[in-house]
Length: 376
Image (tube, rainbow, N blue to C red; front, top):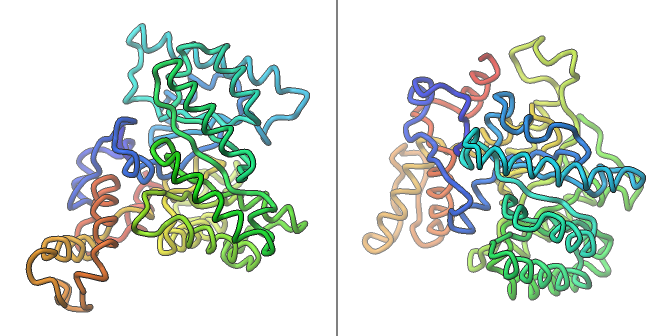
């Protein structure tokens, strides 16, 4: 799979200096975490999941989380679990019949409620569980994470698969200041022990706001909610240091263009403009990718991670001079200084991002490309 698959090849070459490259679940762990980009949530109770994931409407989707947690009413849980099992077996049959291939299907993740549910579903799915790339563990704390991670290791061993863990940080132990530092420190030490199976750390801003009886209005970014922004900063501080290999996904923005307005305009709606602003702040603060609740959010999120030609040239210049003139270098755009030593870690990350999301041609912006996609 690759990003922006729905865009015609000629149009890609029109906009991109370096087009996005194909990738699969076998990509190196940190690169794969960065490659996920926009992650769409789908309730496990949704009918015809297998069909929805293979139609052209979701062609730009690279990964999805099938949710059995908060999106499912308690009274509907058993039905939703059975539906997920049924849909996974339909996908398996499609592979066996060669009617679809792994590269045509987005990476699948399963969001569970607890360890007991994971164990039960693993037994019911059997080898079919290999169709998932990872398991999303909500409300992750230092008290419950080790049991989950150890259970996942046992499932991998038993079914000869390699399911990744995607813990979600969203509990009071993290948002409350009196426990935050100790909780994050305990989680960091635990995650380091299981680092090889942790694909991405997710954050639950909606659960955080709930603990203060708040809800973010649609005209503000999550960074405008100071209580939440302060906590997100602490999480980034703990888990995105250059010596580690953790990748953190940005929090959900749970507003989207009303259904009756979907085709009414070729410009960004008010909600889409706020999401676009927020994802720019995600990028600059160190998040990689974002949880999405509607297909219309996918392109907005992924487009923000495309690298401009100027930044790409800077990154190549810095990395290329690591062993040579590793002092101050003037950028090719002649508008900034590049210091090889302090900018080197940033440059390495940019080159990974460029490989996955592509590099735009000179004088082309990511917003130009996004508006083109919307017009198409």
